[in-house]
Amino acid sequence: MHQDFPGRKSDNEYECLTSRDLRSEQIGQFASVIDRSHVLVYATDYRTQRFKYLSKGISRLLGYRHDQWQRRGIEAVTAAVSPQDRRSFLKIRQHIRNTVRTTPADRQRDLHFTYTLRCQASDERILWLAFHQTVLCVDNSGHLLADVVVVTDITAFQPRVSGVLSVTLADEHGGSTTLETVAYQSREELIFSDRELDVLRLVAQGMSSREIGRQLSITYNTVSTHRKKMMRKARVKRAMDLVRYARERGVID
Image (cartoon, rainbow, N blue to C red; front, side, top):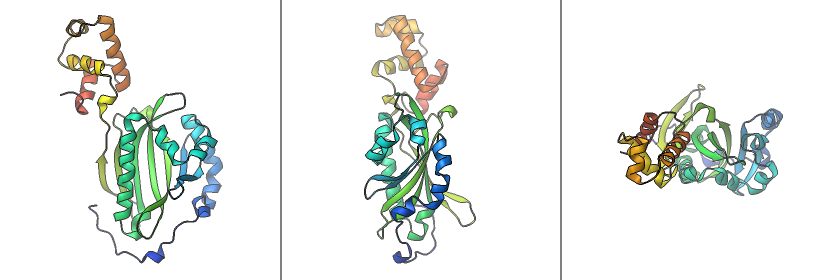
């Protein structure tokens, strides 16, 4: 952490939130509004790995049944993360726990974490979701016991990078300071198949589809299909944009 903090208060001044607090009166007042929206909100108790609050937005956002997620708890979130981003997600969760533990007790609840992940809906669509996570409760050793997370769908904004964690600290004036930004990006090779990568490298060399077909001993139509699939995955419409996308992420040289 590269941030100076004010003096640490004694541990007994920071009692843990109770189960009732996790689903507070304020949350209850807005629950009906949250449940009608496409925003997902959940509060997790890490002592039990279960949700203390889970909005009905899970059905609208990802198409999963509310009762199934309620039973599975935090495991349901991990399972919904796309395989390409799951390792990044686990690293982000560990980074958050470490950050909370090393932050002075009187500032832990001022921490805010933001990250973007690809998640799979019940109909197998891949959505880009933004996670906004805030600390609710820690123990006397600084271990994270509970948090609240707000999840929104940002697929329409066509993001291209996942697994980037931003850590901010709220100040007493209503503003915030960015403490750090850490990239836990997944290897983009996982998005493309081995054959698609073969085609992509030759596209980057300026070869036409017919030249690539002769080089790889595949048909022109097969090359065209690979190119179309890669552009759809990368959300670009031109070959030059596909190549730029791949180079920016270190997929090809």
